[in-house]
Amino acid sequence: MSHPLRTEILAGMAPVLLLVGTAVLIGIHAALRRHSDARFYRWMAVLGGLGAAATLFFEAYRTRFNASGIFVNTPSTHNLASGSLVVDRLSLFAGILLCAVVVIVALVSQPFVTWHPMRSGAFHGVVLVMAAAGYVLVSEHEMATLLVAAVALGVGVVVLCSLAKTERRSAEAALGNTVILGVAVGVLAYGLALIYGVTGGSDLYALGGVFSHARLLGSIGVTLTLLGLFGLAGILPLQRWFVDVAEAVPAGVAGAIWALTVPPVIICSLRIAALAWNGDVWWWKGTVGVLLVLTAAYSALMASRQTSVRRLIAYTTSGQVAVVLVGIVAVGPGIDGHGAGGATALLFDLCVLTATVLSLYSVIAVAEAAGITDSIHSYTGLTRHLRSLGAFMVIPVASLCALPPLGLFMGHLLVWESAMSAGYGWLVALLVLAVGLLALAPLRLLGTLFAHTEDDAPSVEATETLPRPGRLALALCCVAPLLATVLFEPLMILASSAAKVL
Image 1 (cartoon, rainbow, N blue to C red):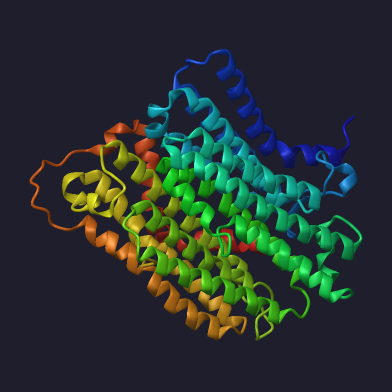
Image 2 (cartoon, helix red, strand yellow; image 1 turned 180 degrees about the vertical axis):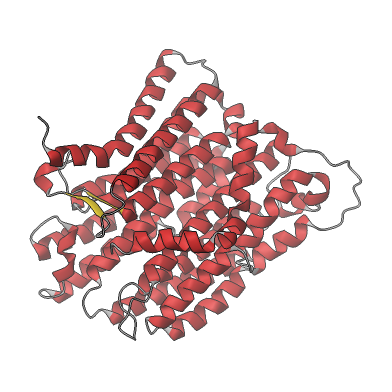
């Protein structure tokens, strides 16, 4: 007879087992039948993502009356991965988001797999493994397992850059990212080592008392841990890695890399910050706020100088990530003694930004398959000559500008409100200015899409290069920033439920 706790652990690890198991099956099939149709791997990845999402929905439904929101919380001696497993509403929220990313990436990957059919199996397998690593990253509070998950994400980025190399810059990006992400993981590892020395254990839940003794070492440990995670999320001073990825690999692959790496890293940072900031660390929050404002301002400056659409979007995305991460500063009680709501605002804003970035790079991949180059001038009058493609691109670009009433604008308002409630009005004032500067570059791109041209070429439907399920997935992803406004209340309920466990 199986132990009840072990059954709960297996239920909690089911998404990881499904994702990794599907990746293994894809790898075996690709090794045995090297010339298989790329559609097989696409639908295998879709089934793996849907299966993992089904287990997460089932776990959420089965424990819907659990008031604590924590469904599995095991000591290290019972975990399958020799660590401490936490399956709560936050990890389920992150897992469902990652499964949705896997399904969308698989459905819209046609432009890449058409040019590289021999690499289709490896591409979809790595995507599944990265999703599993992201889920582990947000579900584990044992330091060694968390570090392994972070390393797996970094290795996945390098592997995808190597698989998708189409020119010399791809190999350079893979090598450069090995160094940059290696530095980020090294900083994370050193910070976790300091925390281990202060707390005397590898359980991150001990962070709640890290400032009660050895305050200096504890502060340095938490600082380095979050700086390492921020580096993986593309925050200064390790911002360069995603810009290199966006420029050097096919656009669809770049979007997949960002959507599989940055969201779980941000949610992991949120969990660690909530555990560590129970003490009097107002000065630390202010330091993080300054770093994020500097990142947003630097990104706005660099984006305004770009003529490459991919680099423009990459720099703007990095700045928007910094704005989203400000929600971490507002974690915990506000100046009125009640919750500031930073975690809820961050989760809502992150979901909208993920849909925005993924849809933008997917549309760019279709545009480049139709013969459009990376120059911003190539997109002049896109809404006139490539009607459906231009229509698909308008909402995500407007969302990246954080224009009202789209979801990213609503999410930023929530982040600013929570920061105000936490007593960081000066930070909000700087953020408003930074977001205004960030909007300039994508507004220039948005104007280019509607610009009049002297070319009287007939309108065509470039999205025909995607299969029908891919077109539907791309359309849904592109209108997601608008749907987030329409479905604002239910999405806020989900985000608030996930944030309550912190």
